[in-house]
Amino acid sequence: MADEGASPREILLEACRRNNTALLTDVLTTLKSPEKIAELLNKATDGVGNYCLHVAAGYGSYEVLDILLDQEGLEVDPEDRLERDSPLHKAVRFVNGLPKEEWEAGASIVELLLDAGADPRIRNKAKLKPYELVDPRNTELRSLLQKAEFAVMAGGDVVDADGEEDDGPTGSASDSE
Image: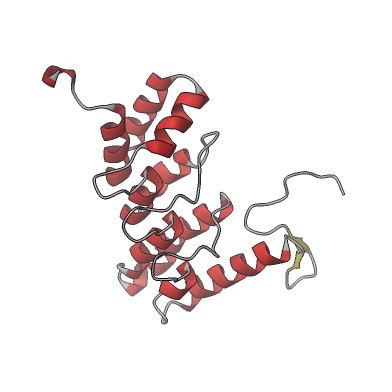
């Protein structure tokens, strides 16, 4: 058994830690079916209960997150075991740990999760939403999360500054009225 190497779960989590898209693609390719991929992505956790999205968001692994969020059947709002954080909470914590001049680049991870349908209204164990974790000096990220929360609550009926309808962070599911 010791000769078999790392398990798909271990490879997945390592790819998330290191933003290694080649490693992630290799493990996803070996699973073949979308059902098997979704099962691995939705069940694999590290030793402290972080799912793959938590790990990728917490390490700022943008490219890996982008691939993961394209997988059919992926749960975008799982709660970790310790803090009951969502991946969006982890992404905000990651951005808070960056130097101020890198906040804008770090916010792209938050945007990626929001675009994939992450819910900015989820509260963690401390009863905090991701918005409430943002460094108060990071006004751009605070504004992004506030707008996303409003868009979810408004059900996508948001009109932007130039009078165009905004479909919210996840877009429209259909073109029908």
